[in-house]
Amino acid sequence: MPDMKLKLKIWRQKNAKTKGSFVSYDLDNVSPDMSFLEMLDALNKRLVEAGKEPVAFDHDCREGICGSCGMYINGYPHGPVPGLTTCHLAMRYFNDGDSITIEPWRAKAFPVIKDLIVDRSAFDRIQVAGGFISVTAGAAAEANAILVSKVKSDEAFDSAICIGCGACVASCKNASAMLFVSAKISQFALLPQGKVEAKARVRAMIREMDKQGFGNCSNTGACEAQCPKQIKLTNIARLNREYYKAY
Amino acid sequence: MNKILFSAVSKKFVMALAGLFLLLFLPVHLGINLMLLKDDPQPFNSAAHFMATFPLVKVVEILLFLTILIHVVYGITLQIQNWLSRPVRYEVSNRSETSAFSKFMIWTGGSVLIFLIIHFFNFYFIKLGLVEGDPENFYSIAWQLFTFPGYVILYWVCFILLGFHLFHALQSAFQTLGLKNDFWTPVIRGLALIYAIVLPLGFAVIPLVIWLFK
Image (cartoon, rainbow over all chains, first blue to last red; front, side):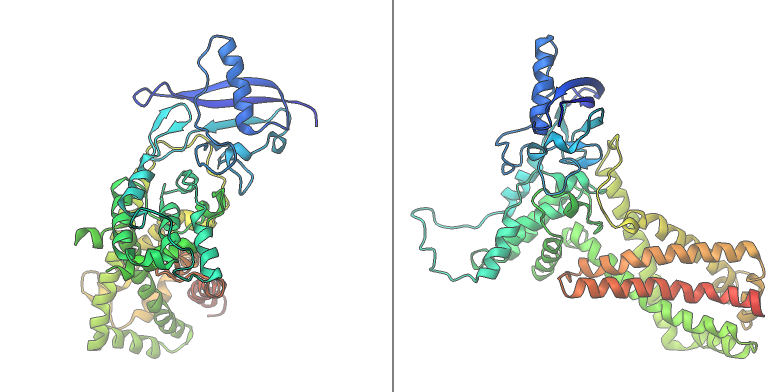
């Protein structure tokens, strides 16, 4: 596959207080083997060489596990390929001459800090409210002291793989954080260690979620469709059950 | 206490319960409406009289109005919160694969509400004496309304939109109540599809039959 020429339309915003706008860039020599972030690196290299401000975007591991990268690409959080983070999105999924519009996550709870970077600390505050189990710190406990069935263990793992990237919020028409919160609730609710504080946890996390200004879930399923870790809607149903049991 | 009653989860719970209660009322109304297809006005008028006077039905009627009010107020409140939760819209509309009907619940629900208000003016307010008409002869009032093409078109449009609303509503209500798994979700989806087609079709077919054959 030959190198591509792309027309990029990127949201540029100096800081949280200034008003942003879209800026268009023509980028050639884009290798189909590049990742989306590498394509942006190439753009930034050219911008820096031309003495211009590079495009700011979040990234860290570039292995699809840290949840840092995240941008809204042509109407899709993390781009048009299901089950991928932006860093894993290869440029071979695009065609020569494509126009690509890149926007930051849009939600009241995720204010833009700069260009494509948003403040996702609302997720941290939800986690701090109850997304943990209280254990005595020290040497690791014997793994088989509390027996857990393989089925439950796998289910809990499927929830625990949520990387907190915020694509669920970005894709939801209501900017709801229910998929994220439900995954964090589920990973504990499914395991015996998590049941001890289950009621207090779900109450505190929902209270904090509401406080952060996220919208309400209307079961549209966009979050599930766009989640790079393919967290299921069944987690939201479990969250609801946990909440009702808590009162 | 406020945090329990008005949390994101609780509001949806109230919406789901109110919606499911309203779903139970529709087949009863359809059963009575089908009597409009008879040439004799007596069965329909008797059923309407029974619904207007039987004490137990009066109690259910109050509960029904209260449920409609809760469903509407909570629905509008949730929607306003949802709009406010994304103050800056995307340049490119979201292309995520989602249930199409779920995106327009406020609009399909709003259309049904407008129809309900018109319906009240045509029938319920006559019963209350607020609008002129014979409360003992709803049969002829209904037949008369069905002679207006504009009314029939509005009737059909509203019932098609009601079908769209019901299809997502039924599935969404069970998900909100916590029932979603590999076995029940396809069953509920199938039942929702049947309900969302059969009920509105049942209502919509009445003016059509009256037009074509009566």
